Image (cartoon, rainbow over all chains, first blue to last red; front, side, top):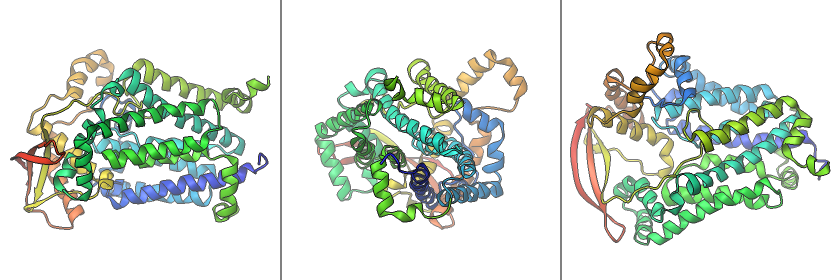
Length: 283
Length: 185
């Protein structure tokens, strides 16, 4: 198994990762949430985040937001390079260009929804290993990404337990559901809302659910010490994001791209065997 | 020696000194931002979402938009990426224009940050990290365009209501009030 060619591994993982990203870029395009569809929003949120300040000071909004040609160009290039990354996952130049364009989109979206969201961060970071030309270096950074994915859930656990203390606030589960779903429940008193009403009237279900989610985040610490439980670690982020989406409308499904870092060589060989088209093509 | 070789950073050092330095800096910045600075001064690093307790509220208030006498709604929760462009921006606009809320960013920038960094003001005299009257004045037109893009209709009126509701013990919602607070168009 250890002899599985690195080139094939990179090709296969590259296509899975960039394919997943393309899917969500299309999703965002349909929802009018990509640059060409923003129509030059006037309100911004830069806060005291100096990366956003640099984005503004370099007049990026002037080039890509308030100039409709620039906005369309950014969209076209973003999609184009994402497709090129899928077609040619071994060509690092396409990944570098896609990563740079995605950074612009990431800063734009967060600036103009007037809120700095986190879910696109993982999209941005998982493309970084593909910046390497040498496969061995890509492999080292891809392994590092696996640690980073573990780290971000563990750090989220640390924040909730030791810094912000929300873990010890029993009402957190039900309070977040009420806050996030109030408008939806009010406007759509449908079957789904009946389920939400049931959960809110039985708050111990949501509150214990919240505690379980935090503990699941903490379990990701295992990934720092062994690869033995990578199958479990692959499922945990999926559980966290699917449950928090359905139970409390926290739409962080994009972050699931991180689970590809837990694919073992055995998994990759199995995918290669069953989905050989994923490694088709010369480069 | 063999044990050492299982350590990721050791293997990275052997593979590429350059990557080792980059990854080490990334790790150091991550830990520093999360455990020491604890404030988001650049993206990627802080994972503090839902880390602070959400206080129990007796009632909940949100904004409702009526365009051409129709209610603006998003029937699916997965529409979030597009919905935020309507909801968050409108909340920010109403907060500044109608509620005249205290803008922490503006206050901190003008009262503390600029006096502490006088050269910054000289170098970038037009820069401001907050929204002021000029941006607020452009908002209604932009919102109308976005609504037209979403609905495919020509928009002739946009009214914003502040709606207050409470949760009943059954988990169902009861409306308390709904007041027109601003007409964008």
